[in-house]
Length: 456
Image (tube, rainbow, N blue to C red; front, side, top):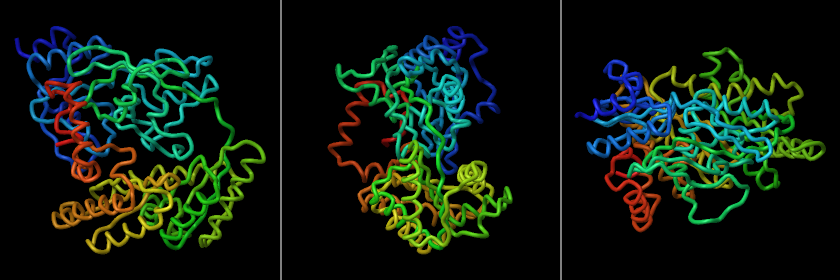
C-alpha cells in the first residue's frame, strides 16, 4: 500500500488534498525568495490521533513531513520539499478551554492568534504575544517560530506564555510536555525546547498558554524625526531612563510613503521617521512614563512630539505600522530581515543598515520593534530585475554580519527556516551546533521532520 493510500484509509479522503493545483498553495510561506518543492500530498488532520497516524505513515515510508500553520512565516520554515507530506493544522481550530481561575487557555494549533485573544478578552483575560500577523497567523505557527510582536518589549514572546504542549515526536509518539501549574521544575524544559524549533523536533497538536488579566487603556506618544539615527537615539534614551514601554515601534519614510500611496493616510508629508511609544501602567505611573518618553523623544531631536489625546488617532498610527509590510509588498518582491541587537546598539545598527543600502544600491525600508532591539529591514527589489536581486542577497548577508558584530542575533522572532541558515552557522559555535544536532537526532532519529530547515 502506498503512503497516500495508507493515509487516505486511516483518515478518510476529506482530510487529503491531492489536486496538484491546490497543493501549490500549501507549498510555501510568505518568504518571497525562499525555495520550495512539490509535495507528494497535503493532509489536513483534525485531531492529535490523526496527526500521529500521518507521522507514523511517513516513518514507515521514510517520507519527509513538513508541518504548516497559516503559512504567514517569513523565513521559508514551512516550505515544502519535493516528495514530502505537508501537514496543515488549519482545521485544528478548537479552543478546548479558557480557565479564568488558573489563567490559562488550551487550544489546538490551528486557532488564529486574534481569535484566541478575542475569546480571552470576553473572559476579562489577555494573551500578550501579538505578531503583526495576529489576524491571520495561528498559535501553532507562533509556537514554531517563538513569535513576538508589538507588546513583547514589556511582556515577552511566545515561549514566555507556553505552559504545556502535546506533541507527536519523530518516533511517532504522542507525548505531553510541560505543566498546567503556575510553578514546576520537574525535569528538563522540553516544552520550551520545542517552542521555536520550527517543526524540526515534533508536530504540535495542542498548546496550553498562560494568560494575564486584561490591562488598562494605553497612553500613546508619537515622535517625528528627520533621521532614522535620531529615532534610534530616542530608543536608547527611553531605555536609559528606565522606562519599559508596552510598545515602542519605529516606521521609516519608505514604509510611510508606501502606506500613504495605498491608504492615503498623509503620514509621509510630515515625517521621515515615526516613533510610536505606549505605556499601559495604571494611574500616575502611566502618566509619568508617557511624560518621560515624550521628553526622551524631544531630547533626541524630534521635529515634533506629542502625547495623543485621541484614541482613534493613536490607533490609526499603529494601524499604519501594521499596514507597512503589505504596503511594501505592492512595490515588488520583499526580502525580509529580522535581526535583533542590544537596545543601546539600535541607533548604530540603523545607521549601518542605511550604509548597506547605499553600498549595494538597494532600497531598504525599516520597521522595528525598537524597544527591544528587534529590527525588520525590508529589502525591496523591482520585479524582474535579477541584478537587483543579487545585490539584495548580498545586502541581506551584510546586515546579518553587522547585527552579529554588534552583539545581536540573526533572528528575533521570524525563525531561521531556509533564509537564515548561513547566519545561524555564523552565530553559533561548532560545539553548540553539535548540541542542537544531537537533540534533533534524539527526537527525530529518522530525520523526517522538516528536513533541511534551521540547519543544512
